[in-house]
Amino acid sequence: MQNMLEQAKAIEQFIIDFRHDIHMHPELGYQEFRTTRKIEEELERLGLSYTRFEPTGLMVEIEGKPTGKRVALRADMDALPIQETTGLPYQSQTENVMHACGHDAHTAMLMGAVKLLTANRDRLNGAVRCIFQPAEEGGGGAEHIIKQGAADGVDMFFGQHVSPLEPAGTINYCPGGAMAAAVVFTIEVSGKSAHGATPECSIDATLAGTQIVNNLQSIISRRVSPFETCVLSVCTFHSGTAANIISDHATITGTCRFLSRETGAKLKEEMEKVCSGVAAAYGASATLDFKVICDVVSNNGTVISLLRKAAGNFLDTDTQMKTIAPMNAGDDFGAFSRFAPAAYVFLGTEGNGPGHNEKFCVGDESLSLGAAIDAQMAIEMLDYLTR
Image (cartoon, rainbow, N blue to C red; front, side, top):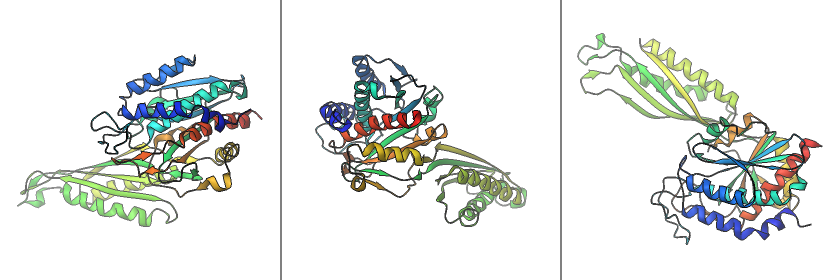
């Protein structure tokens, strides 16, 4: 019997063509109607039923032996509001929208895995849920589809992200906290307005706000361990409407990044203390809105060990798998790890990176490997859960 990579090579042109078609017709988050329909058409050809998400995206389950176990593979589908300038023959045909982060490749690899798993149902000790997710790029797509049942009943999750910065045919992973949670915060400071000539009649929101900004910096240096990855950046400050009026309101916004949920909870608590305490010292009040845009991507050790076993079926894991450092970039795949053990890894493709630029591109030669890894991981996870 051919191994999974050999089977993937046999459908390599399908995977490449599928990806090129999606790349030429990119769609922004929650607008992936054409992409969703293209996936549906292929599932219908395979005779598979599926569940649509609203407004876009879907999931399909491939049933093997009725063991009661279920694992999930996830790919994101959305593009970015960037004008592509790669000059590729399959360059985006949509003005100011392009796949500048490889989600077209993720979708094509998972579609390839669906075909492989359908052909290997007899090897599945349970069910495999393949999730085609909308709106990863800041749209909260993972949380959105989790509310529609995407994570229900899943025992393990796995996902991949292409990396043109890594050699083609390599698998790159970070144990534990791999990608940071991304937070957008807003602080509203309220005081009392007065003429600039009579400051004693005011409660100066600008003054209170600037002191809040100054004191927020002490959280990282004095409240968070130097061994914890944690970033707090104030990025905007808006206060006042006239040169001779003391402002009664200030709005401060920024972002935080951290690699553990415990650190995130502590950071929020300390920020609330600073905001309320400093504002009170100036007679003002302040509120903090701490919005988690995407959760920490936390790689479970057991799932990583299963990845090594899966890849060992057709790769030299000593030379083609390596650990990488954690990164402060975010991905909403982290939301799935709240529900079951999960791993998210980077597939080397070569090309041009990093992501989110107008010349981003990935090589096609690794796409069949990505599909094979997805499919083999589903088999290994189900075998582990039922042994």
